[in-house]
Image 1 (cartoon, helix red, strand yellow):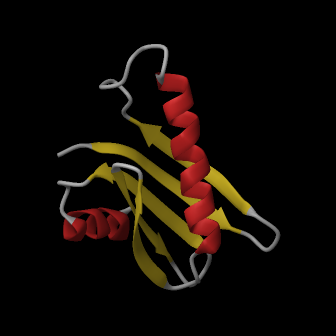
Image 2 (spheres, one colour):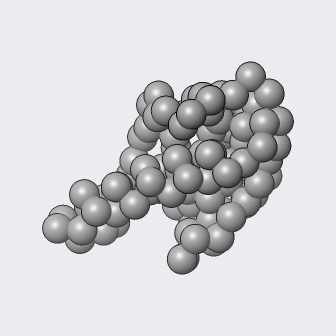
Image 3 (cartoon, one colour):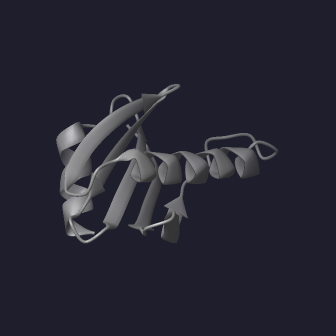
Length: 97
């Protein structure tokens, strides 16, 4: 069970803005880390952009599960984890963040 990314975004009118993000790319090859981090940033922004206000969702992207929670005021949180990480734990983490 691994968490790879935790992102906090703001869903504005024209586009989504990344406010803060934390990544754990230590399990990837040194030369792949920057591209994996870029992939996670892009995926987080895309998922937050496509999610409705006040919604929660889980999306499978390749071998990762992306959990998103968008509040009604436009603040969004995205967790990218592996398939074994419990969904309930991810949404509890997003509620507290």
